[in-house]
Amino acid sequence: MRETGSAAANGHEPSAVAEPLETTAEPTRRRRAAASPKAKFAAETRLGLVRRARRMYRTLTEAFPDAHCELDFTTPLELAVATILSAQCTDVRVNMTTPALFARYPDAKAYAEADRTELEEYIRPTGFYRNKASALIGLGQALLADHDGVLPHTLDELVRLPGIGRKTANVILGNAFDVPGITVDTHFARLVTRWRWTTETDPVKIEHAVGELIERKEWTMLSHRVIFHGRRVCHARKPACGACLLAKDCPSFGAGPTDPATAAALIKGPEAEHLLELVGR
Ligand code: SF4
Image (cartoon, rainbow, N blue to C red; front, side, top):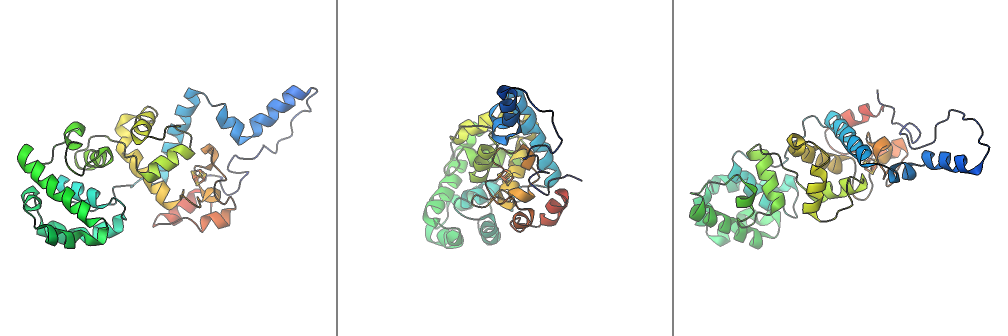
């Protein structure tokens, strides 16, 4: 069982094992620096970063073995539509909206020929419905004009379609076509920055930087697992640091409550019990 139930157990406090007394100030300074989590991560080599990132990914795999795209879909086009609708909207709300939408608009032709007012009513609950309706009609028309009504499966072709940026394209590639892709959404960007996997802020640069740390074949599952961790444990405002199984490898430990009981109460989602078991609670 993992020992992460307290700050000390999380590896963020000096070892309790007695060390011999230093006779000069310099070794004492070095010893203090080594005991400080900030100094530990500041001095990290490239190899150390790669090893830490892969170790954290293995831990995330243990935490979220079944992480997946939380949007409901049965075809690549449905996934593209759901992803467009998910901008500034929760996946739960999108999933409540799409069954009726997919039944009414089963293919690219249906979107291309849609009555705008009717389409807007279907997608109104997802917000920004006028822009989203334009994107869906444009997507249908572009698919009919250039791709025989079928969604293409390369990044270059996808990002040329209305409403589909690089993030959406990577979601489609990874989840509908089994082509590994890293999805840099708000959760992903926040977490890899907290973990100091990269100092980049531009999503494309983050994607490339993280892609150099983690094997390509894992990119899609990495995206799901990081996003799951962001939604359930490492929240934007109050991350559950004291009950986080990544704590010993996280330079931002302490960004949220470190008291185990307080932190445990912050963990959300159906995996909460499993996650708390992993940290020994
Ligand atoms: S919850 Fe805290 S310890 Fe865990 S990954 Fe987020 S910032 Fe790091």
